Image (cartoon, rainbow, N blue to C red):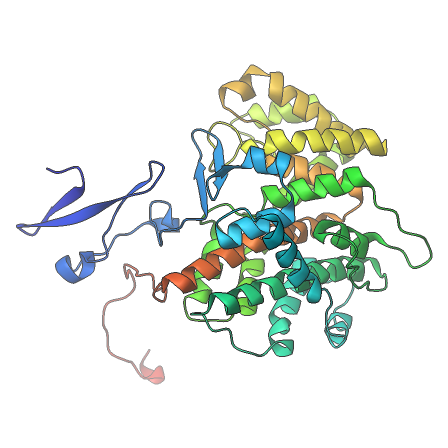
Length: 428
């Protein structure tokens, strides 16, 4: 049997399906004709073994602990690039030259504001509203203030929508934070780069001169780069599925925000801090909780260790650990919960139990530590995740539209009642 085909024997017949080769080892079976030829569908709970599209944006190898954006290793991008350049890379496929970079940055700055009417929408939320609910609503509301339809056949139109979304979304994230803190809303500062501008919008107080701390900007820059895309995860697949109905960019991104809100997806770094606070409130006995984590009969789980995709190590964790160390050292924070985090980190990197099971601290562990150190409320952590993931969502949406992907329509295996006749209520 040829290696580039898979043969299915069913009902006395044989059916051949081509093997699709990726550029770096990925292989898939093209079963797009399966149902029409055999009447069968595949049943794959959670789509763990199902490819819904082919994509040239991000490659990850969980066994090797490798993550590439457009072919570039995440380690090199985090060390040598910045978030604006990575956004351009994801959206356009190549790193920009100086002229392209300057044009891209200038185009974003043109839209570095949000309509004043948006303040009325955010004012309608109570301060205790969950930030992700606020952010999803504000993102969807952008459609009302930018009603012009995007021509999906025009790269120029798609790029304009992307730049508009990138500029506005930073405002929405910053305003969501300010709402939770009861602070006045800030507008952007075009003298700053993207990350600096966001940092200032978040933390500038009305009664003080604002100073940029470069080590904080550097940490935020790296965090956003590390979260910029991660292949076909739940929120990214949601953006593509919603967009496949030719839904607009703003509404599609809003759906991604809602998907990311789920605690099994974007809430992992928040769960890390909640775990640390739990240990802290229980007396801070780290050894006790290490023992609980090792006990198969105990429901306690160490959050922020290991990864469902990376079976060896999370390549992003090694990068952000350095930034975490710098933040804690520079800021000189004395916080019991962060002390507990450092104790857990030390044990996980030295204890044979964790080493043998490859339960190393992941990117969520360190990002949670950094965001807590910077003073973000835990419920804001997922908003920061969304800000980082935004260019990946847009790039995936753009790729899907340019490729002309058909509308997503998963199938099912029906297991309900068989056909039956209606019974009047007085006879039931």
